[in-house]
Image 1 (cartoon, rainbow, N blue to C red):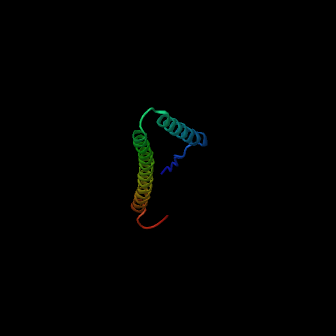
Image 2 (image 1 turned 30 degrees about the vertical axis):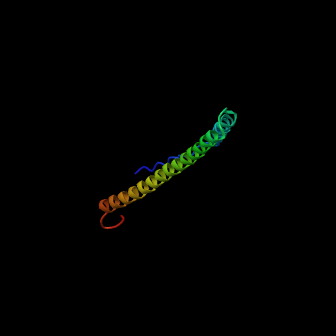
Image 3 (image 1 turned 120 degrees about the horizontal axis):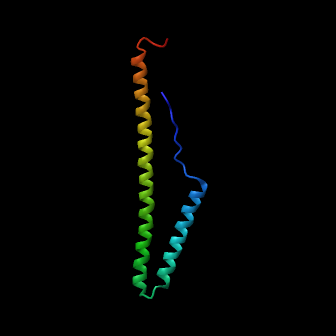
Length: 96
């Protein structure tokens, strides 16, 4: 049976680009809220909404990653059980 190892990790450049984009978007939004000609209450409301949106995005990313990791581990265990079962059926008396 063939065993294929797939690397799902991101490159250092992609990781850096994602953080740079996040920081730029965050700073731009904060600057927009600060420079907005609105009452302090309106700015506070927008800032709180922005903070909760960021929090929800990080939580969603974590939950999605955790589910992917759990499914990957589950599939790995199931594949190993299947291979063991098949090898026992092909060779019921032991190894030759």
